Image 1: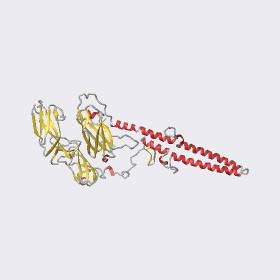
Image 2: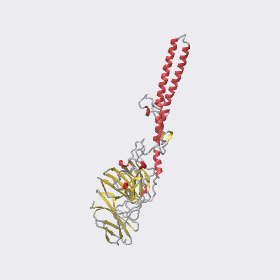
Image 3: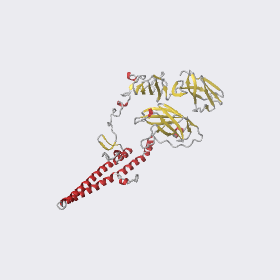
Image 4: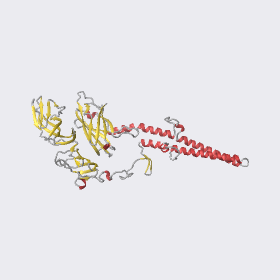
Length: 480
């Protein structure tokens, strides 16, 4: 299986290959994803979309079970067939969440992979399982570990599993039987002592000897009982490690591995499961209401939620004004490392004006005490609007602008000005036509597009004057 290595550091994505596969493939290429410590403790999933941004498929990231020692910051996940159904640039969005509902994403990063065209891609690939089926498959992988705990528990409790040497004479039941046998010996010895005492006139010395034997047998019985308790439940102080090497301990381990909850808690015994009210926020070191600001989300109109001067981590609700754009209801996540470094991510909905649309996301960072400009994680791509994105080219921010090219030429050359100021380097160019064709590697069904720091040029080898085109430019600027 081919492997693409992906490193996710905070909200930055770095990959060693842009080629996701060939149209029609499925689960032939995998992503080896490595997260930094920012993502530790978060549930994670990948949402794939095809080259048209459609047919989303969610893949839950579940580390392989290895007796509780699995690395939760490294995952291998195959690229599903749905993302490779169409040629072009498919996308994947990695989400991190802590709530029971995956819709409450705390982290979200996005990137794209190229899908090469395949003329023979006609047979449907195996569909990607649902999220619930993926989780059930992961649970099934733990059955072997659960069975091993249950078998070891039985071995220490009663033996008969053939899993370790001498288990039939080294378990709780065996030592309990030994204790019972010693008790019977002691009882018989005591009776013998009584008979000897009744014959004291005949042999007082014999009676004294019988009593001594009875006392010795009673001592043996007591020692056997203590040893039996040690192997059954521990807490006798007679052997090293007895509290983690007894039948009760291994039974509890098997019980918890099987998902049955703790053995006893808050006066409840048996298969105890968590209940509401078992813990308070202070018990687990959490802020009230679950917000890092110590309260519910604060409106930006409040003095307590000045986006440039938030003291803490948490959420704000309000109307941020970003480069002259107006938005309606928006949710802003603020993550503070210290006074000089922080990150804000805003999830936007439209208000009255500007190029916003539902599910737009913007982000900015505070570095050395200064806020950097807002950048678009997923620009809304309105014609004629310049967007500063979260992408980087040679260390510089990448901007994106969608331009109406108008009609395509008739076996000729057409040049238009893109009216972008301070262009340094054209990073990427893409175009679509009114008949739905998509440019691939600078070619668009007989037309070739190029661009420089002032114009866009289309050279056509056929008559395409009946079509119009929109051109997406990505570029860096001399002003940065």
